[in-house]
Image (cartoon, rainbow, N blue to C red; front, side, top):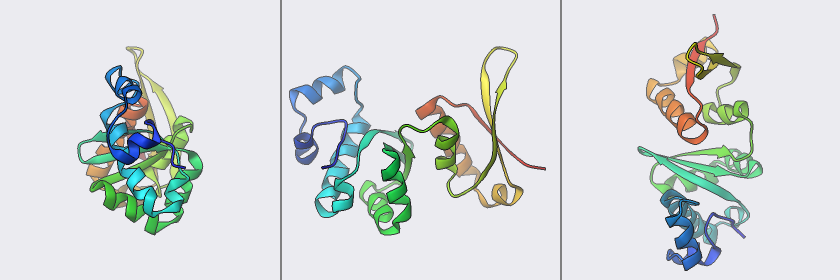
Length: 170
């Protein structure tokens, strides 16, 4: 049974019960969580593989949908192009699927997927703030579009509060 931030009945009907409505009003869940749960619930009725998944939360940044899911679910979606296409089509926007309980490096690797990260380092600035420096290969930086890099930076800041700089190895 698909697990989402809202109860199963609400996800199937698209109408929130008092408990889930209260979660939304108090900020425990977001409108993006609710909408993603409803869309995935509709997909799960047609696809038994989605019905076994867990959605922890969701975000929308511009025209990008971010789904934070269980690690094994992320692997299942990445290894099944039909499943990935069905999810993208259902949301009607570019969907980014990231692992819920990964460390920062794995989180960044999932955003850059399939690009290999050479290194991930913390850089402390004089004012006490920190940046996360990601180094990728020269051939990879040429293949990634600037708009995608900007989207990755926005997602990492929104979801994990990671301020990102991306460089190439020399």
